Length: 76
Ligand code: SF4
Image 1 (cartoon, rainbow, N blue to C red):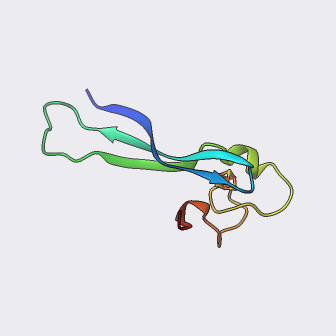
Image 2: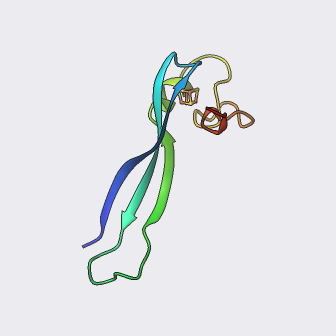
C-alpha cells in the first residue's frame, strides 16, 4: 500500500515570523510491489504559512502574499 506523509525538507529562522519554521513536502511513497517507482511530491508548504497568510501586508511566496520573496532560498 502506498504511504502519504509530510516530511521536513529544510529548517530555518524566519525574520517575518520571528521563529524557526520548516519547509515541508507531502510525499507519496509507492507500494512495496512497485519498487522501481520513485516517491512523488504532491505539495510543499511552510509550517507557519497559514498564520502568515492571515497577517496584514506581504510575507512571502509560501504565505501566498509575496511571490517575489522565498526565505528558504536565502543563503544560510
Ligand atoms: S510563510 Fe514565509 S514569511 Fe511566513 S513563516 Fe513561512 S517562510 Fe516565513
